[in-house]
Image 1 (cartoon, rainbow, N blue to C red):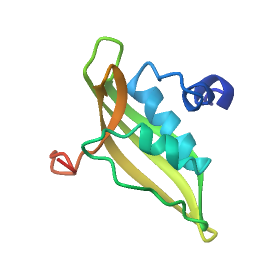
Image 2 (cartoon, one colour):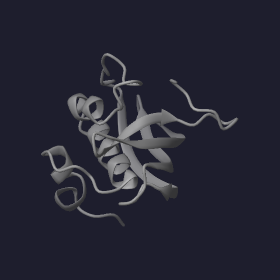
Image 3 (cartoon, rainbow, N blue to C red):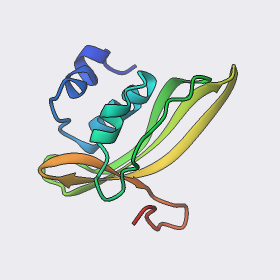
Length: 124
């Protein structure tokens, strides 16, 4: 079981930068749960960030499994986190799986984008 919101993601949402790529990924998941589009956008690299993200009223995120994490530590410039996010869309369960690339930008971890199944990076 993960940490409580106030220990894990709350501090990031209040302005304290996550120390690792995995911590940033977890805080972004929590931001999606809370429909906090401002945090999602602020934690996205400016070269790959969309102009906006719109919450879906029918979609509710219900759980997160971190499957693998590499790099993304205190002395790293990049990291990869693979996760599975569970949701309910219009009452029907589903899941999303992604290998995400994170990089440091201005000294803080930011989300770059998904790594495609052939190993290339999206949104470059």
